[in-house]
Image (cartoon, rainbow, N blue to C red; front, side, top):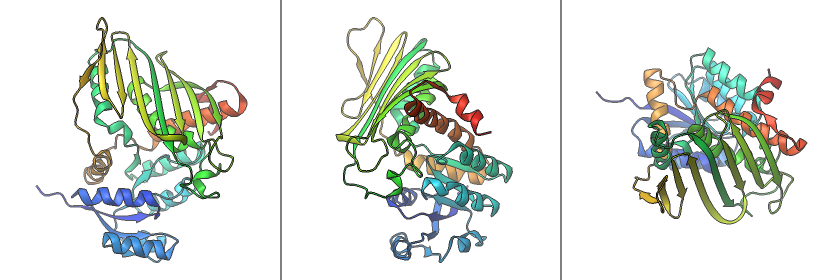
Length: 336
C-alpha cells in the first residue's frame, strides 16, 4: 500500500529550516508545498531551493486547506502564537525544540494541540541516535542492573556565529542560554535513559560569547530513582565534543564521538566496542511525524513530554540564579 505524502509548509527561514527541508527530501512521506518568513528575500530563496511556493503571509498558509501540517522553526518566543494558530486551523505541527521559552506557553501549546486533536511532535532527535537506543535496550533487559549515575558533555565552538542581538543570544528568546539551546537535548537523552529528573542544582557562566546569556552551564540532576547525572553544556569551547557515559551497578556504557560506544561489564578489565550503524535521526523523526499524521498516532516526544524536559531546564535556570537546588515540580506548579 502506497503512502500519501503529508503536504507541509515550512515556517521560519533560519538555517535549521534548511536542515529539516534537506531531510524531508530524503523521505517519501512529506512534501514541502509552501513556505513563509517575514523576510521576502528568505522565503523566495527557500521556495526556489526546495521547489515550493512562497506565501505572502502565514495567514495564507493557514487558510490553504490543501496544506496539512506546519514545520515550525520560528524563534522560541513565538512558538505559542504560531502553533496555536496552526492547531486552530487544523494543521498538524512539527515544532523544533524547545516547545517554548517558558512553561506557561509550553503547557498552552500542548493543551491546545491535544484539544484540537492535532499531532504535535517536538524535534528531539538526539534520543534517536542508535548508540542511545542500544543502551536503552540493554537497560530494559536488566543488563545494567540498578542505575547509578551518568555524565554528559556537549561542547561546541559558537564564537562569531551569531550577531549580538540575535534572539539566540537574548534571555527573552533563550532563557538560560546554552542550557536551553543544546543542554535540553541531553536532558531529554538522560531522562530517556536514566528516568525522570526530580531536582536540579546548576551553575552557569558567560565567558566568550557576547551578551549576558550563559555560554557554559553545569547541571547536577537528581533522578526520581535516586541516580545522579552531571551535564555540562558549552558554546565557549575550542571544538565540538560529545560524551555520554551511563553507569549501572553491573555495567557501564562509554560513548564519545571520537571513540564510539564501548561497554564494560562488572569484573572485566577493559571495555569492549559496540558496533552500531549511525542513523539519520532527523529523517527518522520526520518519518514518525508523517506516520502519526496519517494514522492518528502519538509521537514519541509530544507536547506534554516536551514540557517536562523544559521544566528541568527552567529548574536549572532558577537554581543558577538563586544558588539553590530546585525541584522540577516547583517549576511546574508555579506555572499552573
